[in-house]
Length: 177
Image 1 (cartoon, helix red, strand yellow):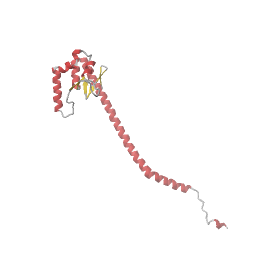
Image 2: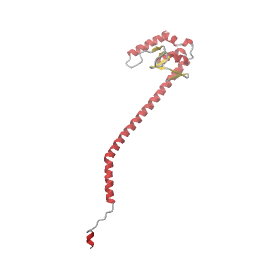
Image 3: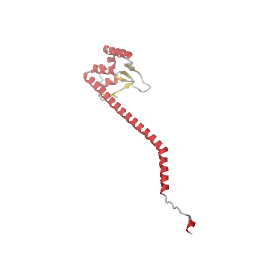
Image 4: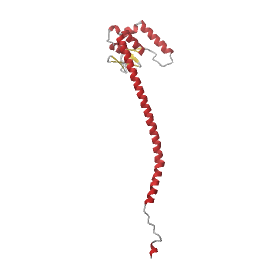
């Protein structure tokens, strides 16, 4: 989640809310999203992003700007949503202080994502290790239950028989007479 100046910046399909960025920047009328989008430099950047996206082999967002109007069925907010490159450009257009806030917010988000990704990978490795060990233990218990345990039980019974005192009568009961 992107947070700038204690404001959550909404997202929709990987695009960031320019309206939320406008509020986080102070909400001055001269900085409203429609003014930014109409700028010649912004239009040129949008064209460049579209050109690069269409020629790139990577899966990228093909539309760097999406305007969402009216009430959405999924409850998503309306407004103008832009790719991260345009977020940087908007921040540069506002002022250096806001630009720095945006850069630091993205750095923080990236750092958090990297930390979570490392944690996720470690947990997956741990899960696989435990799963493999449990599988081996399960196989051992299966073999133990079917082969080793019955053999030990047989050895116990045999030893118990040998431990029982036995009285053997030599010559039988009539031999004393």
